[in-house]
Length: 285
Ligand SMILES: Nc1nc2c(c(=O)[nH]1)N[C@@H](CN(C=O)c1ccc(C(=O)N[C@@H](CCC(=O)O)C(=O)O)cc1)CN2
Ligand SMILES: NCC(=O)N[C@@H]1O[C@H](COP(=O)([O-])[O-])[C@@H](O)[C@H]1O
Image (cartoon, rainbow, N blue to C red; front, top):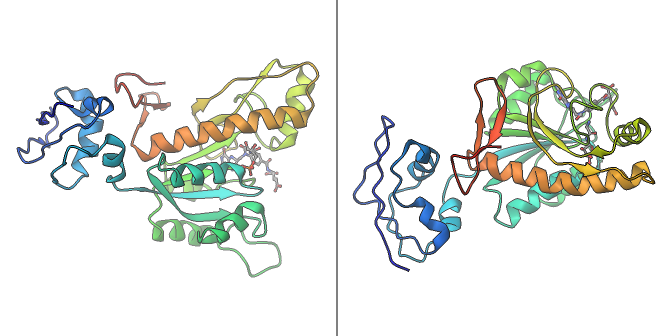
């Protein structure tokens, strides 16, 4: 593979024109890093700015480069089995998600997600306090705890309690949730777990699917970031539909986690979050 030096030019005030930052792409996939001469490469420039100045011996792939970027710290909230949490964690283990789960928060300290966290050495925080028990933290202590873990993003994954406004104010654009229907349909207070799928089937809807959205003060009213359509069949039970939707949830949340950890979630002027394409930074969805 021919090697080429990377001369960085940006209209940003932080010119990154460093003759010593030589990047020798080792495969065609890395070529996108070469000739960053337009504003659209600013995301890539930010990525590179985080890298130390280092010589690349020509064997380093862009995936290895990504791994040298500082990992994002994730705080995951669960109330049940935690299969979405495990899907995100598997994405980290596989090297696809450039992050780490630094804390698991739950209102059910014995749930499957909490047990998985303990088995994997991930600290568990109980919120809100369990009734009539000393276990659990206050809202103030929860926020302080997330800050102490230096959490960058809060990901709700089957968490069944209302996130307090104090946390949302502390993390104004950094809390996301997955819901098992195509919001705004079948969302809000009372719509969680199998209740959602039963309502979808009872309505006669022909399509359902997961939604990942920004979290605001109310249940399921935050702006939508990502969705995937799943067919609803005439003979579907709530359990069969739940299984079909959950399969797509795992893929969608891993995709969103990858984008978040690569700073590829961009906010439109009207407040809608978009995912910037990894292949072409001019494309958003
Ligand atoms: N501030 C926010 N908090 C939470 C949101 C949100 O969008 N904003 N999303 C929920 C997750 N969720 C749907 O995606 C959801 C979870 C739970 C409920 C609900 O009605 N809960 C019951 C209590 C259930 C229980 O304790 O077992 C209730 O509040 O009466 C609706 C939607 C997470 N938090
Ligand atoms: N309204 C919130 C809600 O219903 N969330 C849903 O709870 C399930 C948790 O499964 P998991 O614990 O295996 O990830 C998921 O289907 C998620 O969409």
